[in-house]
Image (cartoon, rainbow, N blue to C red; front, top):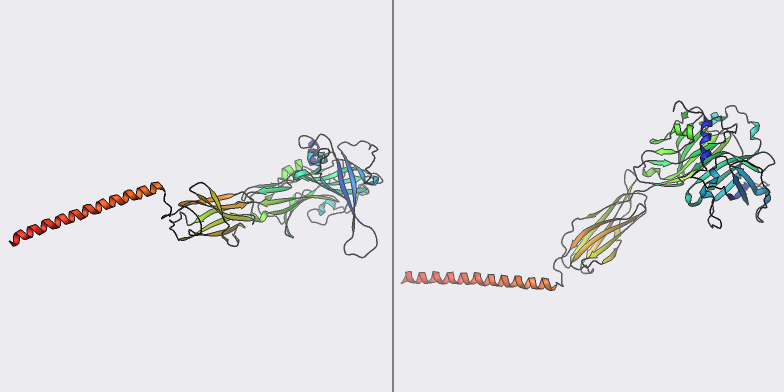
Length: 440
């Protein structure tokens, strides 16, 4: 992590966002303006108000044109946002005209303040608040269509104006990620800071956190001002520090995906007095391996009960459906149900296993002379099948060819028996004649 470029070098990269990744025109975003109610009362939680608002996005600052606000939106809730990086002009934030689906957007008042985290506190060592902070600040969180993009911005407007400028933006294009077990994972997080802002030249900090079912842990934290990592760092997790300083690429790299990595990840970026974050979900998915026991199956005879077991192992996440099918010699398939299922068992690597046991009673199931028995698993990682041959002997309805073959065998056996009998009889007669001659 040596020879790092200063923070302001990363502020130049996002200006090319209006290429292929972004649309040609910037949208008018419909947002919910959320703020706490100011009033009297001693409640434990402050009530909040929701107001519709409009954000007119542009990449270059130009005077705001007088536009009539819709009847259901108060004129004070119509804002002009200048985004030099063009992040808010991404195509997923600009649906076709008349589209029912729209991006999700929420805007809140924001209060700049120093961070108390040890990897971000060096950003405000001077303990002084610059005059630059005396303005209107807002925090905006936006989710694009189809989970293509999530954006968090901090905007600033001079006092008594509604013309905001993006000072800090954090984005991700991996809102929802699936990964196979053991494979590398890249969780995207990009940051951009306005190079014209006096805050962008004072360093930055990046923090990655993990949350799952109410529990969380620090994955990695980096102080870009002093080029230092926090003492706590999860094994196998890293950043591309050169790309972070040069291009604002704060993406988290997991060398090998494990089941324990499934959950919610939060990428938080700190500037002096400012903070913005995006969240993304990682799901490690591994389909099951199937095996049937016994294999091959023993020959089945009429009236015999046969127990077959299907073992599904090494899968994640937990959800799995097991069932059985039988395909007869006539080519037709029939379901046999799910059998008797066992509970889930968890292995040392976090993957799961489950079994299904099937009782085959030839007196109750019309299985014919035999066929193919198949175990079917339906899982998020994809369907899996395992098959084994089932053969029966002594089937009660033989075919014409089988009957003719049985008659032929019977005739051959009858002839062989007659020949042996005749041979034994002839040999006995000869011996009796010879004995009679000796006696005489």
